Each structure stands twice: as structure tokens, then as C-alpha cells.
Length: 481
Image (cartoon, rainbow, N blue to C red; front, side, top):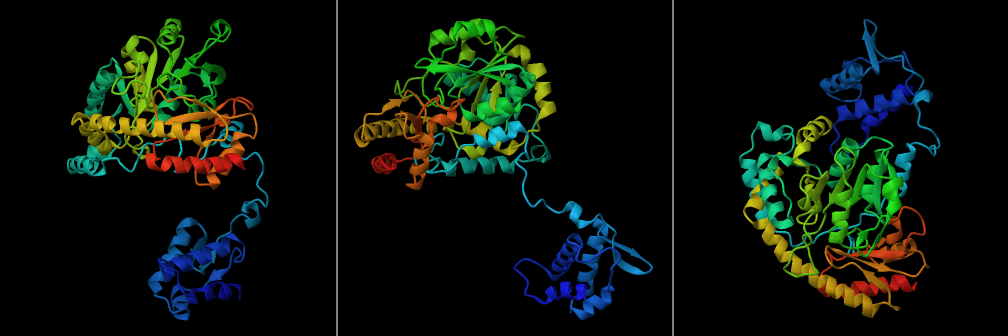
């Protein structure tokens, strides 16, 4: 009787995309798992079941064979029967989810996750609407026409040679990075690059200095690697460690965003860049230079930002990290690391052992995009656009907000930071802003602990200049609630 009730569902209309043989398989499997069909129950023969329920016998055989291969059924001379399996109650899902289903580190990361809505004022997003998609598509098509089995397998350790060559030239001309192609390692995104630094250059329990406030993905990566985090304050000239830290808590890793500190926007002074280099010793510590959006220099229109720390001392233990998320688009997931010449062999072997490369076709297309001058052309066309948007946003904030808030940043990049009074909390204001369709982020989320700062981080990459005043009015509504 139980089997007849279960199989009666075969007569119901099928949902789109489901065949009757798949439904039969699903019905029997579910009934066995939840105990409605107990061990030893004999199923009707394939011919009989097909006749009774007007199915093709091949469909019944398919369902039976699949269940046999998975161990739900057994077959012998007596026919096809339900297998003897552990009691379903032993594998039933818990009625309540326990509080500690993740490790303590994973739970801490989940608590610090930031929103990812692609709304106006979302920081860290370039203008995806004006990216030269037709040109990029042609380079991709050309790369696909040349594809071979090698490009469809894992990418070469370190990345496609053509991209490493073009990047070496691009970084030398645009950022003052001194390197050969073999010093460049291509990885699948900026977080993979940071993860590689955390895991390959330090051991669990080693100390890492982080800017406070800090780019959250960097903090999360270091915590996930089991490193001891030392939070170092940031002022108008960048990270400002007290002298005693070098003596009492020297770092194994030192993480910096020197060209445009995230999220406060300060630029690390040349004096401090040289001071950090003077403290580094090969074999004792490493400096990770995250150069995430230095190409957009607003302090000197048409000029270059301060050269990379790596270029000041090419043999120093510095790992230069960059991505194409701001220059092109974040979904490309291609980033790179530049390592000192003396570390190439060891670092390359470790990278090859830990990660598997991909996107060989996209890497080849990107190499041609750089070599053709298209990347430089696109960057130069976007710089004045972003500069204008920042000016409009700054003016709209000064004129549109009820009281004179302090605005930080602006020398480079794609975001501004607004400091707020202590109350109301910025997390409340950011939620209110989201209800108005504006995706600002709370500044407090970037600090290591509560009470570090109260403010909002506003990106202008995806905010057209003509819309900014109206968007600020939406933000004003949120602040006034």
C-alpha cells in the first residue's frame, strides 16, 4: 500500500525539464531516505511497473539501475529490494542549527562581512557602463581562435608568458616598478594574492601589522591564516607606527596601501616609505604593497602618483600586489604579484604547489589589450571622468548635508570618506541609506574594534556626475531620520 501511494505521484503533471524516469528515481530515493520504504521491501518488476503506470520499460530500468549503483537497492534471484541502510533518524537534519557550526575564525569573518550591493556610492567599483566591451570582446575572440589544449588545461605556473612580459613593461612605465617578467606571478584575484602572501611568507602565530582602519579582505585573510594581528593607526601621511612597536612587536608581515590608504584615503609620505624600507631585513620580514587603485591620481591631474615602494629598492623584501578590478572590471579575477629577483625560485615553487592557475585565454587577451595601448588609453580617459565626479560629490556633500562634516581622501582612487559625529552609529545610517537606494559603507566596519571611528565611505565610480546631487539628497534623508 505504501509503495502504491508513493508511485501514484507518477501520474501528476511533470514540471518543465523533468522526465518520468527521473521522477521515478527521485520518488523512490526520497521514500527510502525518509523511511517510507523500509529495508527488504520488494519492488515490482520493471515490466509490471511500466505497465501499471504507463511508462516505457527503459525508463523504469534507468531508475532502478541508478538506485542500484548508488546502493539504495539490491538485486538477487528474488527480485529488486530496498537495501538495508542505517536508520533514517541517524542521518536526519538537526531540528535546530547549533551556534558553533564554523570554526571561531570563520565565525569572526562572517560577522565582518560587508555588503556587496552594486548601488550608487558603493565603494571599490569602477564605472562598468563605459568599459570598452566591444574592443575587449575582439581581443577575447582573437585569443579563443588561437586556443589549444594547453590553454584549456591549468595555466602555466606563474601565468601566461605574454601577460607577464606586457605587465613588466606596463608597471615599469606607469608605476616605477623595477622587475623582469619572471618576477611576476599571475593569480586569480587580489584576495588570492594576499592569501599567498599570508600562507607562503608567514607561519600561524607570526605577527602582521595592519593599517587601522584596514581593507577588510586583507584583515580577514590574515586572520584566516592564523596570524597575530597588530593594528597600527593611520594619519594623514599613512601608517604611523610608534617607535616601540619595532622594538617590542616587530612584524613578520607588514601590509600597506601606500598610494591610497583604504578607507581613509591618505597617501604614505616618501619619508615613511623610506623609513619602512630601512626597517626591512631579508629573511626576517616582508612588506606587502597593495597598489589597488593608484592609477587614478587626482592631486596632480595628468601626473603620476608617488612611485611604488618596490621601485625605491627593488632588492628589498617587498611583494608588490595589483589587480585589474579598478582598471577594467572586478569579474575578470586576474591579479599579480611582483617578488624580488632573489625570491623567484622559492616563491614560484610554492605558488605552483599551492594554487592551480586558470583563465589562460583571458590572460592572453589581456596581454594584447595592454600591448596595444588600450589599457593606458582607457585609464587616461577615465581619470578626468572620476576626477569630475569626485569634485561634484565633494561639493554636493558640503552643500547638501545639514552640518559641516569632515571629508577625507581625494588625492587618488574612487572613493571619499565622510567623518560623522559619534551618534547615530554609522551602521544604522548605512542601513537607512540602503533603504534610499544608496550603498554607502560604515567606516566603523574597517576598524579592528568598536569605537574606532564613525563615518561613511562613498564610492563614485558608478555614480554619474549629473546624478550625484540627487543621490546626496537621498543620503541626506537617511542622515536626517
